[in-house]
Length: 242
Image (cartoon, rainbow, N blue to C red; front, side, top):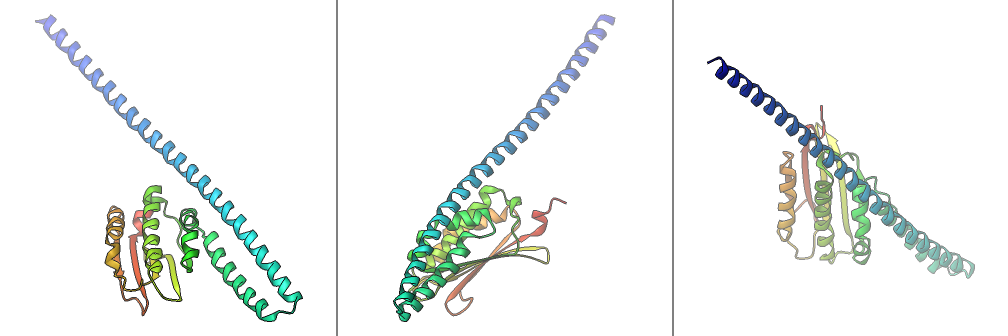
């Protein structure tokens, strides 16, 4: 009887020890997974920033040479007293600087990367792009979600402008923090005979992402005479770890 009790006690102790070991291994595995995820996220951010810096260098290099060529033309027209061409080139230079300065120097690395990858599209369709980023900390969304949201939003704006016959094609991206709400608003020129539901797939993809953060999405097709608006609202509590 005593031997049986001793055997049972030893078995229970062994079982308890085995459970503790299993729990320890499980916790260690979780911590290891978290560390690996953090390392992966860090590497992704480093790769993203490298891509951004390369694009920024290429854009600035092209911008500098284009500006120098235009300045030489202006100087030549001035020396030849061709004031009409001088004025025309000066206006072109003004437009060139304002447009490219806005595009190249967005205060968000992610948005700048997306914009610079669309420079050809912007220039070919003569789109005036402007960013007004009063709030810029979207790290709580995660790198992939940030990229997808802004890529989808800007694709809608650029695609709509490319279909427009208007002489004034505009895409404006605004972000702000008001009343514990993060605002992301895209204002864009309506495409000629274009119906925003054409971009329903992109809107659905955006909604799926922001829904994870209790966000909302509103489309206003008649924001003004020639423009539409997409407004994304995210609760600031999603961004605040406190």
